Image (cartoon, rainbow, N blue to C red; front, side, top):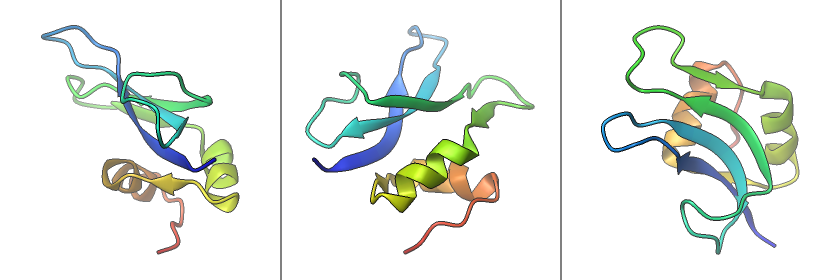
Length: 83
């Protein structure tokens, strides 16, 4: 089972809200996920994302592949991402 780390949209039409999730690669964007790892609220100016660094490090260690967007959030949080 290939696991990826990506964003899942759960907001309404004018109020986007995203969850950072670990999900099976074959699942749809808004489908079932394995674990929620954080969230992102783009409308907020400050403190608009929170992530669980410990769990993200675990998933990266076991081979999960982060999307480009998730990679940028991980770098902002100060977590090292292998290439």
